[in-house]
Length: 636
Image (cartoon, rainbow, N blue to C red; front, side):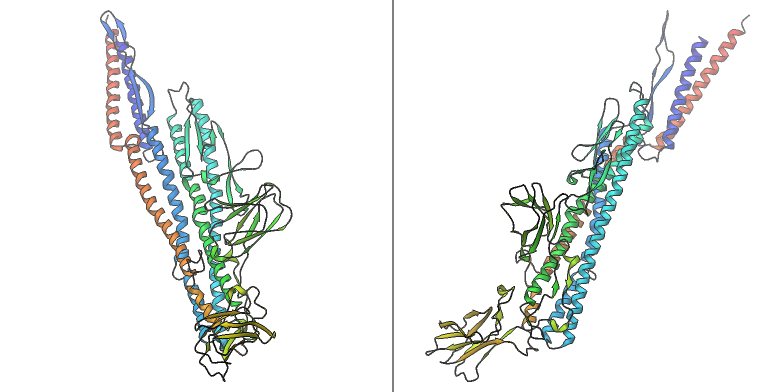
């Protein structure tokens, strides 16, 4: 019996010691990330049968288990991947928002100063000072365009670097999970006894992985984890990690995408499938915020430059020559896909029709089609080129397209970067109109003629007869008139019915007739010689500030820029609000998970006392058993 008491005391001592060790382990790891509180499972040993009944034989320590809930841990992972997504997106989009919305360094002040300089030229068209100031302010505005675009380009480069770094981190974590799968599988035995600390390490790695990209765990029968990302792409299969790599985009080599790294070249993964985490945020920020912002900035630069050029060409400079392009406006960028040798050219036809999207031109062997990448709207099929889509004319430059060829064309991506100044000589500022009008001094009636306006539809090029001297002579009775091109010695029209307030158009100009003419009264339209003080074209150039020339004639340059700033700000605000909500969800989920799995130091302190007392009691039991045995030995 003493031996039985001794054995019972020994099992109780072992059980108490197991409790003390486990409690100490919990306390020491109370602040360890991913640690789950552990507990000792015990059960009574099989009792011993005797004539008086079954006598207990003490306690058995069966297992040490984690306080673990797969459901709560998965909820934590889902919440964590969303918090990381919005935190990364907010950090990126705030940089764009701060850049374009800055009242000092944004684009708005530069455009206002530029048009103020244009108005100064209109006020003093004959002075070199105002013209030189216009050229200086034009250069300042171009520099602002260039600087804003360079900052956005730097952000794009930074995104590429962060994508590469994130992929390296994902690969490292995937390798660690695969290694732990092997260790856990070899130590788990029959599956009932688990290496809890290794399980915690693996679950914590899955949590860290979800900070980088949304990952799903598929538990295998042997306890191993298979990890997938995106739409089911495997990242870890048992003890084998599959490596990711950065891949230059097939359409745009400057853009880094994500791909699988097998034995050969990396295989691209559709970035739209990689959601959640910092990687998903970087990819989505680039495609949904950075690309549209840079394209919108480029569209404003191209629209302003193109429309200003068109009006400037309708004017006349101080030398009496026709106006030339004031800005150097870049053509749309066309990049052939890898393996495509045929060259496609692009040119602007209507800046008001430009969007902020990129496009893909594809050839299937018989026809072409154009996909607008922002909304996947397809134009075509077209039997051949040239074709015009959204204000851009596409034409085949050289080579012969083959089936499967495609080209990425970006009408506005580099507009702000490549906008330049084409006029550096103040005398070349075309502030005057090339033609003027007058009424003959000998006229008896009150017929008047407005200053002629050059028809924008007449260029390019300007009508060759624009500066010819044209006379408008009223007949008798003065209800009709004849129009004669004196320079060309040609009659342009006879017996034209006169109505006060009517508009006539000849040789690329238009003007308005009014008043009460008398027979033989003559009105003249001729070249504007010596027109240093003429500001008519400068006034038209200044009016472009409030002319809605973008978005199909719905937006001015300023409203287009304000809309871009508003869109970026709205995204920044939405991301901030949603991110804050996701942070609260994570806190609540973590609280629920910690209430089950977290270490409560007060509870563990109580357990220490309980197991200490159990240990002391078991020791006392062994001591009693020893004295009983000694008493037996003392019997003679």
